[in-house]
Figure 1 (tube, rainbow over the protein chains, first blue to last red):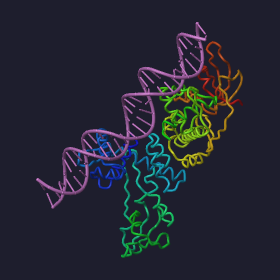
Figure 2 (figure 1 turned 90 degrees about the vertical axis):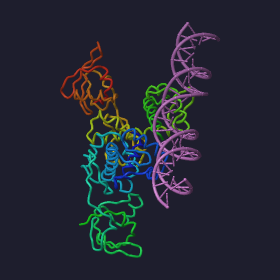
Figure 3 (figure 1 turned 135 degrees about the vertical axis):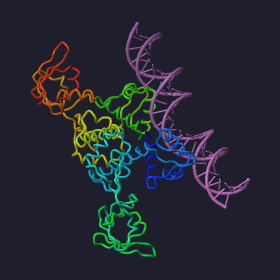
Figure 4 (figure 1 turned 180 degrees about the vertical axis):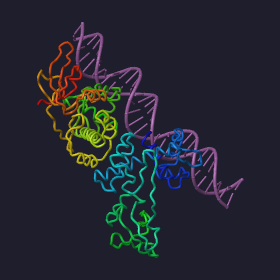
Length: 217
Length: 217
DNA sequence: AAGGTTTTTTTTTCAAACCTAAAAGAAAAC
DNA sequence: GTTTTCTTTTAGGTTTGAAAAAAAAACCTT
C-alpha cells in the first residue's frame, strides 16, 4: 500500500466515522486538497483492492477491509503521538507532522510492541481514542463544552480541532486534558462563554467552546 | 531528499567509509542491486545537489555536505536500532528492516530527542558507532577475532556481518556483545579456530571468526 | 425537458527511478 | 603501440504513481 492510498483511506475514514454514511468524491477532494478527478482515479484503485465500496455517482464507503486498514493507520498515528509526548517530551501541538510520517511505517510487530511499551494507552494526547490491535475502539462519553448548560461542571477530555494554533491557545489559557471546567454563563450577544478553569474565571468565544470536549462530572 | 537519494548516499558512505577513497559506479550498482546506468543517473543528480564529487569515469566520493547527510542517516538508523532493542525488546537480528524504514523519517528534533531519551548511546546493538548530532564518531579500538594470536583474550564488541542468519548463529552459540572470547588455537587445514567463550570451548569456522570484532583485554 | 451541478472519462502532464543497447573511455594484454 | 576487454556513460524508452484539464456523461431539480 502506498502512502497516498493510506492517506486516502484515512481521509475517508475520518469523513465517514461520524456518520458512518457514504462520502462524496468532492468531499474527499476538498479534504485532500486535490481535484475530484484524481479522487475518482484513486477510488477505482482502492475499489479493486476491496478497500472501498464504490459505485459511480453514489459516493464511497469503506469495506470491512478498508475500515480495518484505516483504523490501523489511525492506531499507528495516535500511538506514535503518545510516544512523542510521553517519552520524548514533545508538546501536544508539535506531534502531528511527525506522527503523519511515522504512521506509514510498516511493521505490525513494531506497533504492537510500541503499544505495550506505552502501557496500552486508550487515548492520544488530544483525547482521541486509540484502536486496539483488532481495531476495537473504546469510545468515551463526551460532549462539546458549548453544549453545557449554566452551572454544569466537566473535565476536559479532548479537542475537536487539533491544529497547532488552537492547542497553543489552550496552553496559554492554562487549559489541558484533565482541567476542571465549570460553565458559568453564556453571553447571548456573541455566544461567548464564561467558564471557570481551576479557580480562574475566563471568557472564551463560542468557537473555542465548540472545539473542546468535556465529560460531565 | 527522496528515499532513493538517501539510500544511495548511505551506500556510498559505507563503501567509502573504510578506505575514504573513490568508489566505482559498478561497486555502487552491485551494492544497490541495480544497473550501472541507473547509478550514473543518480550520481548526476546527487552531484548537482553538491552531495557527491563526481567526475565521469573517475568514480565518486562524498562532499562534506554529502558526508554529513550520510552520517545523519546512519545516525538515525542506529539510534532507532537501539530504541527497538532496548525499549521494545526486539533482538539484534530483527531490527534492520524496521530501522531501514525509520531512518527516512524527517525531523531533526525527533532524532535528537530520541538520542537523549536513549541516553546518548555511542554504539548500536551490533557494536557500530553512532554519529552524534554534529556527525562526530567515536571509533573504538577493535579487531577481527580471526586476527588474534593463540592465547590472546578479547571481548566481543561488534559484528562485521549483520545479517539475520549470522546473528542467529551467534545467539545459538551463546556469543553476544560483551562475551569474553579466548583464542585457543587455529587449525591450519581449514583455518577454523578453537575458542573459549565464557568457560565453554567452541570450534568456529574462519568465516565466523572473520566477522566478529573483539577488543583485546 | 432544461439548466445546473456533480462525477467520470479521456487525454495530458509530470517526476522519479530504472532499464536496454550502443557508444565512449580507460585499462590491460599482447 | 595497437588491440582487446572491461567499465562507464549516453541516449532513448519503459514503468509506476500521482495529479490535472477538458470534455462527456449522469444526476438532480424544477
